[in-house]
Image 1 (tube, one colour):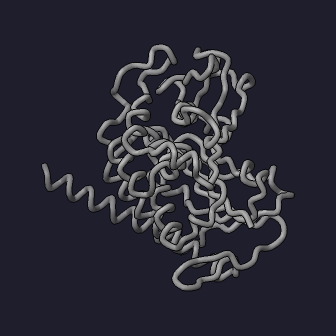
Image 2 (tube, one colour; image 1 turned 90 degrees about the vertical axis):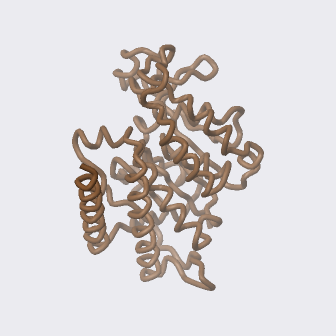
Length: 307
């Protein structure tokens, strides 16, 4: 039985995935995951989790918020407004390379290969190519992680071995297909920006447990801004939403017989044949909206109190 974890792309919204990882680790489900796939911030989270631990991942986020790449030096060579190379600095503080390379859990990440670091290459999607990297097997994995998170114009392109790459989320923001190809029969999926497209997976033999209500994130122009809004309060709120959602979805899996609960931990019980998608019940979505409202009120009161 192979269990997979899909970490979608979505910039600063990726702090949500920390809360998911916390709950999966709490019940020893994360230990049972064989393969992780990630795009953009999902690739970063997967790398920092496997190369450090949950505390290291949290610490790297706090460091990143304090040293937000937005506003740092310009990435002239890659054609971006700012540089994302601060990730190398963060990795040097929190990543144990040997631990990552020796991990029994595999991490596949997505990047988008382009012809050159020019605006023309960014715009012509017909010239994009999907680059899938098994991160455990490459030298300088942080370079590939940076390539997966290089938002065009914002951070520009990342050059690796005379080839150029931009954000993997542009070509495959929810890399579920990798996990299915690798034989995962149960996948915990954490999209952040776009719904998962199951059209190409209709003949797959996999149970997908979705752990995100995309309605908790801003829409329209707010959606674009939320990608680069690395805010401590929002980080804490998203972790809170994720922990609640994941706890409830594990209970849902228990009700459906997908999981069983023994000695304080969850284990796989039985899975149906074919494609089986477990989505969030209405009560979970309603509770999340109430949590968002209460957090908004708290922040509003605090702001008014400071004026």
